[in-house]
Amino acid sequence: MKYDVIIAGSGPAGISAALESARSGYKTALIERYGCVGGNLTMGYVGPLLGTVCKGTIAEEIEDAICPARGMVPDFEKAKIALTALLDEAGVDVYLQTMVTGAEKEGSILKKVHTDGKFGHMEFSARVFVDATGDGDLAVQSGCPWEIGREEDGLVQPVTLMFVIDGVDPEQTLLCQHEEHYTDLGDGREYLDLCHKACASGELPENVNIVRLYRTGHKTERMVNATQENRIDPLDPLAVYRAEAALRRQIGKIMDFLRNNIPGFENIRVKGSASTLGVRESRRIMGRYLLTEQDLMEGKTFPDTVVHRAHFCLDIHNPAGPGQSVHDEKCPKSPKRYDIPFSAMCPIGCDNLITAGRCISGTHVAHSSYRVMRICMAMGQAAGAAASVMLSTETSTQTVDTNLIRSHLMDRGVRLEDN
Ligand SMILES: Cc1cc2nc3c(=O)[nH]c(=O)nc-3n(C[C@H](O)[C@H](O)[C@H](O)COP(=O)(O)OP(=O)(O)OC[C@H]3O[C@@H](n4cnc5c(N)ncnc54)[C@H](O)[C@@H]3O)c2cc1C
Image 1: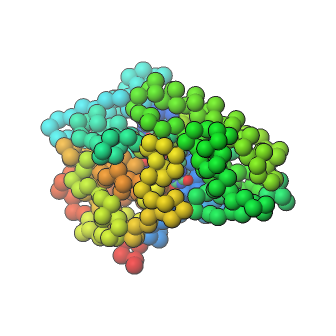
Image 2: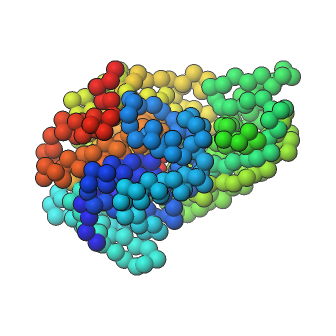
Image 3: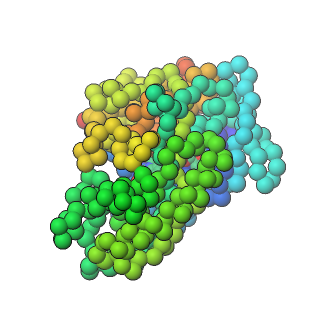
């Protein structure tokens, strides 16, 4: 199979990259291991879309296509259809149930990706490749260097299985939400404090000291971001299986806690759960630039900026226990609006491979901010734009004129120069 651009992984970053590349007129393939496109936007039940970036990115279009309103949890069933419709309309060839398992290089140029699946072994060649697998699988298969976890012990953020509940009484309930929101339950109890005490007493599972609740498009529903398993290596299949099973068992205890403590939650039931546990953090592929916490805190700008005015707090769910690890959970440490340079998306050792999404080159702390979905989508769009410019100018990630990538994005309406 021969393409101009091949994108591995169809999460928020991969879909955005594929749309941008195909809309720019290049023959584009999107390869996904699961039976549905979307990654955390569908299979992972993750929402709402968090983080902000400058105006005019593809994140706005995708959010409008899949969410009842901006800032609300996606309608996951609608997303499964709407994302496919966008990809079909753009002319992307989507390969589902197809796992990227290997790479073939000549010198520093990636020539082919190998895949395995129900249909057997396949080989795909292209001139430019994008690794949007979240875990950086293709970059690792291509021999690029990577790091994982925090510097002192290699631990990554905990894994979580998201689920949705129904049966909340909209007349009775208070709006309990998450760490940053103070909720007085009306009888002298405060929601976050109640969660902490329930964790300490064993009423909630170990390490689950906050039950984050988000509104969906239906008044009687809530998205629950609470289950948590720590010290899991997301690249070890047996560890992932054990975590997945443990997270599903935690749901019952969390449901009992909500039913027994929160007015309006007495009759809740589980409406649905993610098809896979959610991995917040795994490999970070080392690139020509390493984005750091300091860059974020200073709001650093770069000559090759391709994502502008990104913003989200440093959000490290504690790798070793409950709560947050870098700051007081009620008062997250917030960077200035920062930029992401193209050079952080260019893995060392492979000149026609671009990374996009949570696997780009950054530190453990910086990753905790740029990993959220609106920022990942903007990175994906930038990767698609870079691939188009590399093709039209017959250049590599080393030689491409990054001003042309920026112009391409600005022609699309991305406000890279907006302050
Ligand atoms: C529990 C949890 C809660 C979160 N909460 C929020 C939130 O509320 N808001 C927010 O904005 N962000 C949230 N995030 C973060 C956010 O969802 C992710 O960081 C983001 O989805 C990363 O996007 P991505 O495209 O890089 O990767 P992913 O969404 O992980 O997508 C990667 C895709 O690649 C596919 N893939 C992987 N390996 C291969 C392979 N070898 N071959 C083919 N396909 C492959 C996967 O199946 C997947 O579809 C949360 C994350 C988790 C885990």
